Image 1 (cartoon, one colour):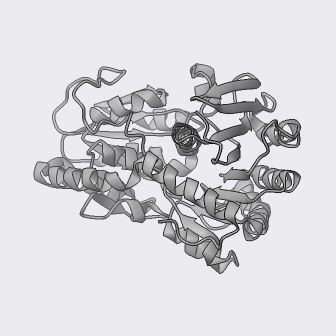
Image 2 (tube, rainbow, N blue to C red):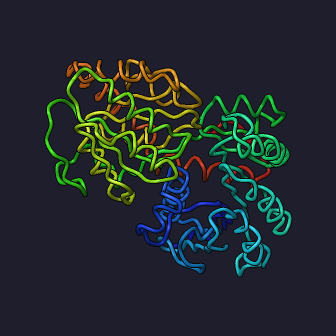
Length: 403
């Protein structure tokens, strides 16, 4: 039931959980942190009685309208053109600009590595004469790294679009304090910035519940099972994990779960290595069972705003080995919930994996620390903090740090 006092939120995001997952959609755009973030937030707010209209791209699915939860409505727009996916925003105009039966009270844009969402959101906020809230999932001006032409374009053009939109938004939600400080230096008023991280769904992640089984049977091998779960994309550097595993001295096995543009490279590096299992894509509902079957989770990213799989791993009681980059150190506490290594350092990554593989007591201590810290990242709690931001911008209050 939608509460009459709750706002009607128009949520704009370039990616969102697909209607159905099959081999085609997995290769086109494997589900990652932003897709899970936007969908889980929508579900939690729906359960709390909020009215929501979601406008997103179709990815490899069909254009059209579906329902999510009790009252959320999801409009999937755009064309089936992976290289021109930003065109979803042009198709989205027909939905964003029309006046719905219930007036829009808040426009909430979710910005990742895309250029189209923020201009669309600003236009929507003007059209509906309501406040604009932006969640920065990846700051193209501060987090994105790399030297390719696409990255340079994103940093230059996307950075300008980002700064312009964020300075004018009534509230900005960031995942880490690091990004909050960077945006304040860009001229975004600090009073408008909230640090609200991504999290995990307690309904899915049972923290090692014995009734969950992985969708794939992994052979038994000596030593701990090390795993990677996520998109096989250049910035995630799953290839470095495979290289590091090949250098390990301690017995262990490696499981790589995911798909994406780096699939061929990762699979090529794994060819010939013993005790490596490449599963391909699995649905997000299967991830808790996969994590429950692992002993260590690795995220060797070159850059990362936060890495939502980290909170899911911690909720599953897994020690984490991750790159000391971006917002990761705010989630993974070195020596308490996991181990941090320099980004791109294969030798350091292999040494950290050997250290955990050789020391069961260390794994147990980090596991306990991870599980305890995970309580801070439960999505229902985080969704209430987002709802508090909506209430403040609707009331015209100065936006401060969310409680």
